[in-house]
Length: 68
Image (tube, rainbow, N blue to C red; front, side):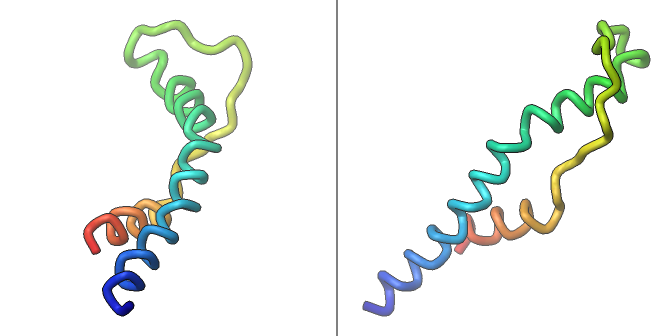
């Protein structure tokens, strides 16, 4: 019972981290392209994209729970 709990708790915590990443990934990619398009000589998006980046804490929790 203890070992199943030790496996289930980190796996359960990973699920919201994956949903967070899936929900915002496209926004982060668009933001990155709009910030770096001129320096990388790629076409810039036609409209302004607000600056967004992933939350560092969520990623650290994700990788910590993956290691446990």
